[in-house]
Image 1 (cartoon, rainbow, N blue to C red):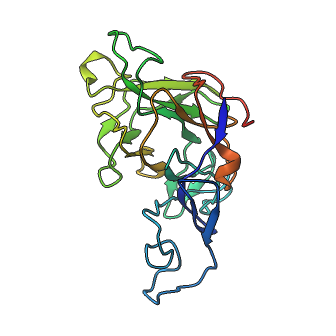
Image 2: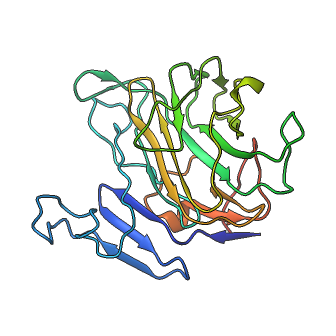
Length: 248
């Protein structure tokens, strides 16, 4: 069963959006104005009153000529998040090369009975999706559970196939293998950030309390809509390492 994701807070080019954690009522602060005259246009806690977090997002759109892009949304649960940075051929402003669009595609922070890792433990997990037509070596890419510490774990020695998925275990046991991260996810709420080798943020998520064996998933894979009710869903039929399908 899939359910539209609620409780999201995200920062996009259009502004800051929050879904009520107890329902699906949409409240927006996206008028493009500096409402509290603090020099920041929207998407700070005062401009968007009541917002817990406004995660940031950067990126280039389709790699055309290095212009920053505004595609992608990420988030889960009470999950806040944004993601973007498309473009495999262009360059970001300042001459930073653009990289293929790799995104966090699904996650489970309360894995009780869904799936065991190779050690037999029910570790939490994060799924990445390669939304490009090329095989990508993730050496130099970084994954973190603290957006203020982007370099927490290096995804060295790992590749992801074109239009393919990569399952990573948030087990805090990196010695087990390259697919085991050096941090765990908190079922009470946490953050996830994915950064390319140039430090460009590809996905940023902040999520609230999770339910056992329910995942938050992009639907369909790599969805880029700025409407989180279109792109993300909770499901009690998670698909780690496989296609997420469509929201029903």
